[in-house]
Image (cartoon, rainbow, N blue to C red; front, top):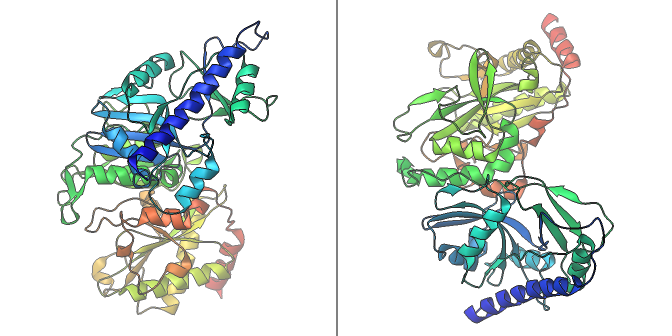
Length: 507
């Protein structure tokens, strides 16, 4: 669309907001109904669009959807407008909207534009909170202060950016006025509230409905030394790594939450490994959780901010405990790690992994597949609660014994490399170290490969694990969803399978 069309659309949205404010002003003449005063609350329209986090770090501007998908290229005028603001860094919580013929935001309009698969030129960004500005984290400041700073930042702003207007009246009249204008409803937040405090919404077509709680977006911490190259052959910088982990966080954080993790840190890039981080670092932020396990104050990643802070410390690879803090003695899954030998081809690995799956199917057990991010694959059985590590290891041992009977020329259980003869190691001792590389974690190898969950029909000799990288996994999540989700709520019971394996050994 032309520049004039964009500006006209933004003016229409601003006009709709002004009309709403004017109607509320008129409605305020007279006595307010008792018990519905909005004193102490900032009330504004509930914009009918898609919630986003808009960030800027120097010239780097990003629009992340509520599920953290990267929408920057989808809304180029918004990105340009954010880049023109008089600041060096910011984070704005807002709503991307598309307007109908009357100038009223409609989610259906936005969805149709996005579904067309082309850049959207006539969207607006209704800005309703300021989380970060020029190096200052504002989330602990009162809402009234954040909104004052937001208004000053947006004064004279380019047209696609719209300041969400605050209105004042009784709640019932606010809702009625929103309904008359065609807005979806209203949102209310405490004027002295910090970011993350509960906020409330009421639909315009349900004036008697109770107020409902919603949650804040997470604001990423600033990236230091963002242009530092950590993957030299791939020209990938720390900024690229933070962007990747921010995009996959909705799938990754639930796998890390409530689970001690060990992080491999590479501050000088993948050619110069530094160390494994077991302990919470000194001067870590409050949102990085700590838990005492085995006499160590261990790291627990329960939120996106904690994840990105660790990535900013050059944490590239995340290894998680097989159990969670609430039940450390009970593994969430059994694992069979297929570690290729010197003469193992990818086709061999595929054949052996399929044999593992067939064995588990005969035992009537579900299984999830993922690449290790290097040459191997992991087959995991998501377990119901109440199992022990000994039971999980017995399952792995039983399946490994079956493989050795079927493929003795291609498999081994010899942990000494000199005794493997170049064969694939069927490793069932991952639990001895307590950790396993977490799905969606990067590996510190050329290509920036990722430990990637796969469908079984994707396990193919023509598609090696090196195909799953930082550059491809984000699109896979959009296309296939989170294939590692079964690991978060296992249902498998091992009693019958272990009895069957024991009977086979005795036969």
